[in-house]
Length: 251
Ligand code: ADP
Ligand code: MG
Image 1 (cartoon, helix red, strand yellow):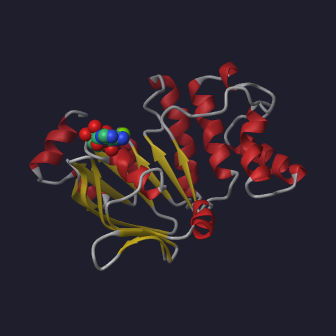
Image 2 (image 1 turned 90 degrees about the vertical axis):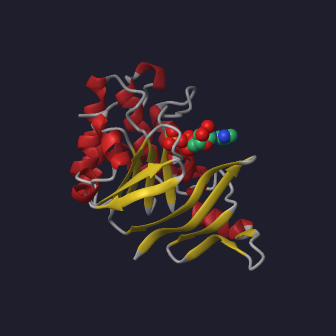
């Protein structure tokens, strides 16, 4: 089953066409990595898929439920507010800069949305949060504030916060780009563990070895189009000159 289907997505900022015709399907349990140069539209895809930006063309479907689609006249319709609220609970998004609430403890960062959005009992939310902190290697950090943690620890709290809402799919936008190299590994290891547990994930990353190792599918973006998509083997051995030039910067 497809958790997410994007079909023929177009996105303009003013007169600039940033996404030209993007289609992708993410199946349940699959890890998709999105790679490509800065400015190629990777973040914009995630922002459109997570409704932080509206699309100008195409359609978005989560688990068979339509988020947005095109009228015959080409105009875009979004589902009603109630429907969108429900669909928002299907996904989580983890950013490059963690985006934790600085004035909340680690525990409060994680339990806030489950309690206030999902109306889960506080005791249950705390239990889930503590369990996730153990999984993230952060046992005992409940009462710390984000500023008391390393970047790698903060990012693992952000991942725990996203997981606490029990999403069907998690999006990551360059989750290790803001980290010192020695802290990158601990976050990538968490992502590898999630992949091994068949968490459905879409990961924008510049970590090529990681993408090669964990992805079921790799998508290479170039100037607002999908230049190639396939297995890691297919994409990393591609003869496409744009991909070769891009990968050449890493090896
Ligand atoms: P990537 O994540 O691959 O680096 P982005 O999706 O961030 O690329 O950006 C793709 C293009 O869209 C870039 O040229 C960027 O300048 C432009 N862009 C992104 N967001 C906006 C915005 N809010 N307004 C205008 N242009 C934008
Ligand atoms: Mg980006």
